[in-house]
Length: 142
Image: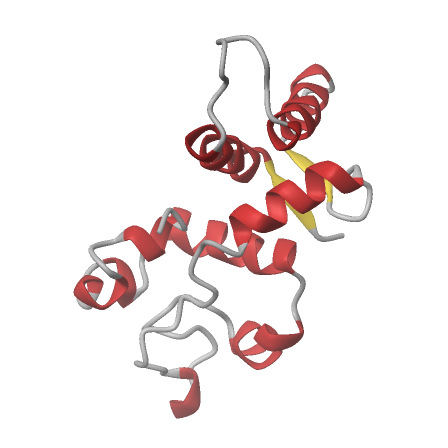
């Protein structure tokens, strides 16, 4: 199951708060309402992830618009999987993830981003961090 993590929902909420601030401090834009409802459901259920196929359409569209504003790939053009490594030293993705990247859903890609960011061992996070736009691409906050 591909899932949308609660931290991505938080990032999407902040994305929309910047783009459509409340005019009166109370009223929320439709995108914010939809994402806030999803966020509240996860908190209420003590869950960290929502199945991407079970997310309400409005919340998914709002999340996807945030997602589309983030870097698509963690690749930094230093691919060691082409040299036979199971895990790329450059980006941290597995050989399978590198091969399937274009076919992966947005939630699957974000899951991979989350894992490699938490691990922080790939060269994109240290040796070649300048290739990531000062670290913004590593967190997906570009």
